[in-house]
Length: 157
Image (cartoon, rainbow, N blue to C red):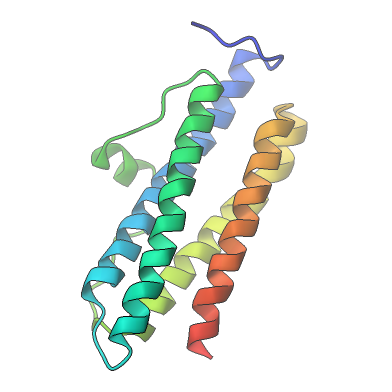
């Protein structure tokens, strides 16, 4: 059934395309954060294991919210690993030592990349596509990622 939410279908389609890219990025970042949780080694193992768990739990909620936003706009969310890998801006984990600093740096770079992507889409969603709701939604996501990035960055100081 088509949505009738006051936004033209071609505009919701354009927004859904960008949200699908975001969903892929979030899923790849979630997977990389899970990897860090499982495989971190070193004297700070226990603290970092718990820290990465808190981060992937936040990402799990974000993933669900992004997919549901795509559906609320009347489009289907990608849901396969193949589609995520074809849509993401991120790369899979680069093999290196399983130290907390290695994981922290890589995850921080990915959060920064997502923050930039979100920031670049706030105005187009609101102005070009007339979708203030999604613009507001991704502004909130940007703030969540900024806080998560701050937490990662704080461990590196």
